[in-house]
Image 1: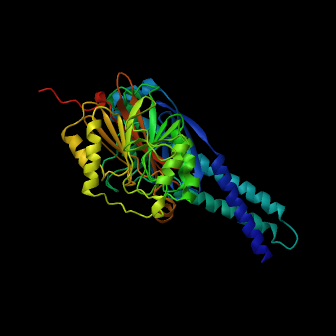
Image 2: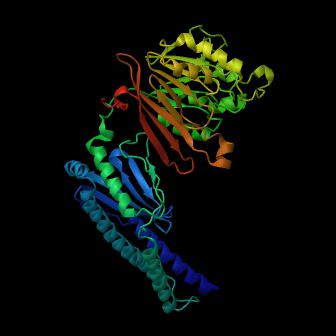
Length: 485
């Protein structure tokens, strides 16, 4: 048994040395269009990762058999070469693709060799260290180290180089800004497309983004923005992500901060009042009147149908509030839980009468308000139908939540924005269904009047922090123009 354990130790040391060498072995290679850094991360989902830091964008191909991620990071870009590539299209992309493939193949050969040699060196070192005594003969430990290094090298040769056939690639980003110039993948047959063809598309896409993002001017820098969130459902684990997203701007929270609105939950989630430069809140059907008052006492702008709520439960009577230069109104949820009823659940079905009340409340606010907040889209159903039939003269953004599904619908001057669930549906839902954290960022201008410019819908995997986002332009110049007759 002692000999078996020592041989296992030598084999384990060899594998560990091989993995360490693979992790630390990186190379930079110069292509016609720029410089790429090549590396491997073991113990990850098998994939080829192409990441472009300058636009915070990446695409992941599930084409590596081993549990390792082969990374191709674009470190520097030759803008002139990319512009030329964008203009030439597919023909020149093939040449760059060949360069990238050759660079990747050369790197993988060297990485596999370095890994095998690193594993062998560490395995031999351990083999000599444990020689003598009641252990196995030195020739056995040396043979084990050599054999393990060869097996590890063979496994890398067989499983590390990317396969040609691919399934559906995954676009991703580490932050809320995603270049929309990189067109979304159309439906791909799992066997009809090859890795080479797809890399063609990525190269041309990146080139076109650098040259002319989506065929229109980019948003100018320095525009104000705000963060939209809802449905935390007491999931305090998600609060750091919300705080990072809201830092430096206004935070609009469209209800369901808690699950029952109870005092225990309130103590946990009141931290959200410090997220962003200012919190603007409307209640949801899982919030309570006590929670509203506590938020008001922290300095948050708690909106109700009759005005801003004070800490003592009264309102100031002003339905439209000026916050950070924006005119904002909010409608407290008619199904919120009341302390006098012991926080009884009032359900989630909004009657036709409640929908009519909301529509009647909103009608006189047309063209007098920039943003209207209400928790449930179902409560706003009749009002939205009226606004779509007779659009407001000025831009109006309707901020909602409740469904836990990110959505944005824009038509003319009316925009309806749902950020999803910033709590992933709550801690119970995360455990059962793995819900993603969802939030949104709205970029806008104030002068000469309020105009939404873009919305970023962001989803974050609470397990590994991986984020995906998509940007929708809302400014009039970004909308498709009718063709001349």
